[in-house]
Image 1 (cartoon, rainbow, N blue to C red):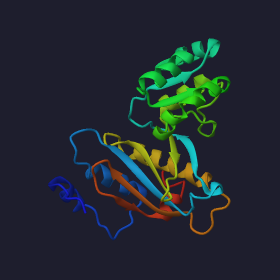
Image 2 (cartoon, rainbow, N blue to C red):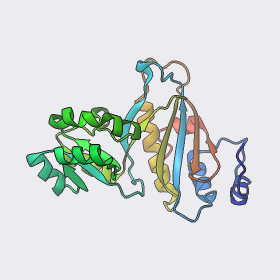
Image 3 (tube, one colour):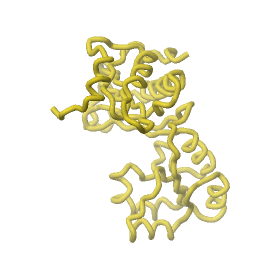
Image 4 (cartoon, rainbow, N blue to C red):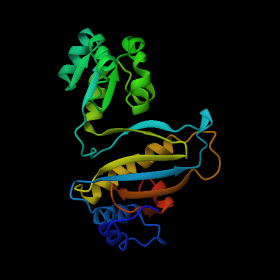
Length: 237
């Protein structure tokens, strides 16, 4: 067990480890147990009843959080011609084609948070798979980042679109905002994430789908959430 600091231990005293809190109580408690001086992220970990080793039990997608993430996102768009101009007008931070691809290959340049590409250039972007893939930066049609509608894709990302993907342990980790958000906004984002995960349930998944839900600040203790209430998509209304 790692040695915990005094602030963490004090925050832990506020959490009853035997209780599974309602979602609103959980996000309020996550704000209270945020001890760092910076504006910590509030994060959710959802353990799902799936076996990620099977292709038909993968859970992956994207959702636009209604109240954003609280983070300024740098967007790179791989596009040419009219679509490049459309991307620039829509507020992309970086736009390019062969020039940007070469910059990433030769300089290992990765100063962006999300990459979007038009389908016609994906053949060239695919060469960056080894660099972008491990960092989760590869454009993917499953999450809406390979599209000709670059303006909408940029708008969604800037508005708070996040990607989620089940890991090897069957857990989805996702941010739902910052500790500076009020509880209602965090709850709204929490509900949107849970709705997306429930809609993404694979048909091959059997038994209990949402096994456990935990909310925490980046540096704070985990707060267990009542899974029945977490799965109730009207909980934030």
